[in-house]
Length: 383
Image (cartoon, rainbow, N blue to C red; front, side, top):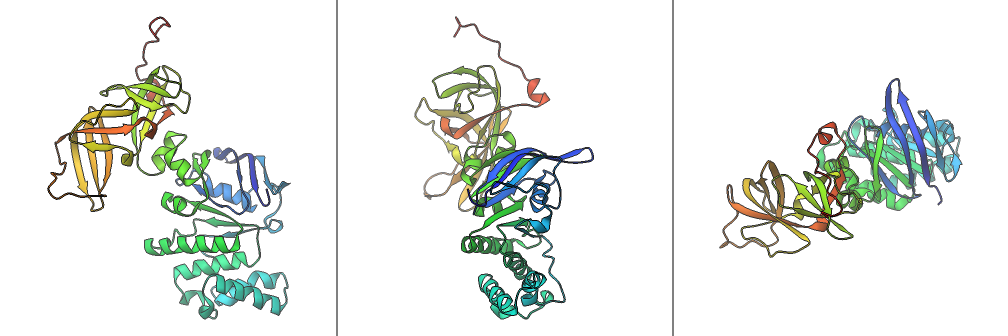
């Protein structure tokens, strides 16, 4: 695959802290790829390893099949855009973009042609002679991107590039980044702690936690089918129910036993076995809420509860429903609203329901989990 970037068992430590732990995945050529995770998860360290600013303790990084693990930064066809922009304050926009070309002793004609192309790409032709102090934060970011792209890198690294901008400017710059990526067609690797940013622009996302790459997939895959409890909790809002696999009810579905709940049916894509502890994760928008019990169905879970709290937000209402010790989050979109229909409110008795395919079974690992009561192992005769 042209310009693909491969990480093979990459590990990097700082003294006693392992910042990256055996990371192995591939970024396809031309992708807009995001590395997402909270502060301290290892995402910036991984980016610095790609740029050549750091060397891994072990493992290999390959670009288009070539080992670049130990190549110095100036020998890699990779440029970086930093959060701080790092523009030269005494040079105008034109000269900031031209700086790398001048270092490489390009002709004035070539410099002019390439800089003018970049000014058109970032839509800043009229500001070519402005100094960095005279333009906005978003414009500075575009100049920094143009300065990196004018050198024709095969990969552009973006290290939290929108963090210094206000919310509305970040939203506009996301659209600009997506447009620029579509026009130049090279690989963008975007590091961010903001899930909304990553979900909005990425072809695929690597979610990192405590040095590990927890999951790599499209925004839809990491949201709809998380592979770990961390991914489920970090990407969007979700409910967790702690239970245990009590029996297999079909080749695809298992029954879970959860305290204060009737038996819960769930799609068993992880192939977890009877007696294993699980987190069941269900997104709030997947759950339906009603005053009347829905019709029984073998692939739907229907649970009675009491409304604990209600927040009306115009286009949707957020409910919290008490079921035993659990407080279940439910999101109801207002596709239709009937004025003569009495709304569900605080302390109402309700039914919540969801399709068995909309819950995901995730393994539980913590010491607290291990201390939970485990179902007694049943004999084959009892099954």
